Length: 161
Image 1 (spheres, rainbow, N blue to C red):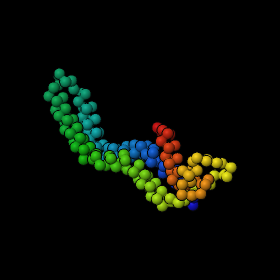
Image 2 (cartoon, rainbow, N blue to C red):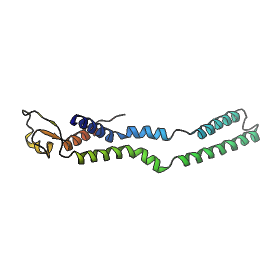
Image 3 (cartoon, helix red, strand yellow):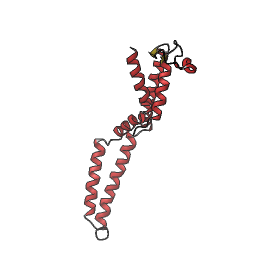
Image 4 (cartoon, helix red, strand yellow):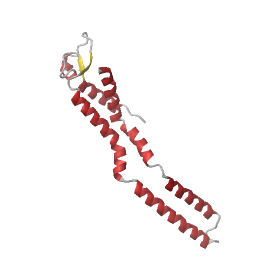
């Protein structure tokens, strides 16, 4: 049980501190164009291709008529993006994974507050820090609290890109 707890706590600590990687993936997924938006983008590209056939000076009427259609498509695209991109959804995608991992770590810390994860050999003496490392347990035991703090410090120093 302690081995599983060791891996879960380590994974959650790293995931909580490196959650921006997961958040970026979620934001990319949320910001993908819908089928309506893809259709409007294709329509806009077709209109722009048609517009390039005309010279603005020579065929001003045809050119400006196509430009008004492009502007209408741009307006529709803007409206569909505004409907889809709500601030709460973007905030949830950005901070949700970190909040979830932090909450799980907090719950695990409360539930396993008296659990030790592993025992250091007796020949290792960390004299001034024994109480901090093994807080509710005996000497040379690594407590769950200390392990979580250590994992968080290491995870903050590692930068993933």
